[in-house]
Length: 366
Image (cartoon, helix red, strand yellow):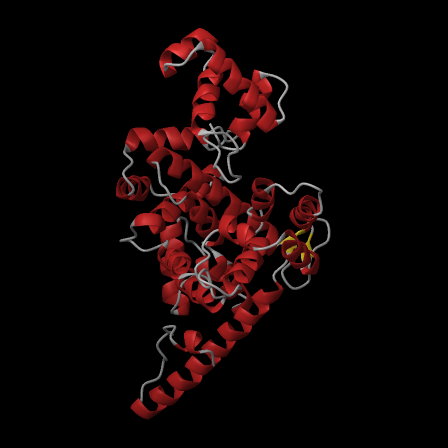
């Protein structure tokens, strides 16, 4: 039995005599451990969404590979994130075991390595159900992406600095559910029967199984060789005393359930929001925005080719200011502003100011 699996708590054996109880407990523990170990191994074959995999292959096969586009394609799928992070953390050197975001992994790996990984990936499609996982990959991905989006919106509101890592922990937060689903055929329907909120469901898991999906997910992340910073967030995202990134993921999970029409506790929402520094006003704003297309600040992933002065000029152009206003604010001559703008067009391959502003905004440089 895997040492990480052996460390998991197990349910009490229902036996009356001391000797029988000890024997029954050992037998139950072994069966429990074998089920979880088999489920861990089954996750090695968890499929990627075919559309995500195919988009990634097109991007890494292009003549000019955009890091930002590759990262977005990988972050759209659970299996791709897992595969890229695992490979990135296996690379020898100072970063081994310390790659905690897809951005880091993609920068570390060659396009050829990512292409090979994507080519080998198993896939699923909505119209072609797997006999092993059935509809689980679809449901899991949809909730993971919804939680990821909610987490990113919260990060913008709270000015959280580790957005790249948060995209990973938010997407993978429920990975332990796939383990329990494979280990226990009655999960989640029978185990969660009657439970409405995320808090009620986690208590049912602990009572019925002796473990919960958050704890199992943390064990799995460590088994995959992911950094402690990632595994601990997955493990603690349902803890009542969650702080830091775990609190962001916990709140994002509740908001994802809310946005998808699920029941959530208003008290828990507010309490968790206060842990990350948000009050009722900020939380209402986030909850209002979630059903609409993302309009927040794009993460800067690709390196910006513009100088700091050129960024300042372009930022003011995006605000509708004319050359004279920009020159006055930056204490430059009008001709110097024109020169900066000419250089900006050349570096971005833009034909006018509107295109330059759009390109820079989409890449997170403004």
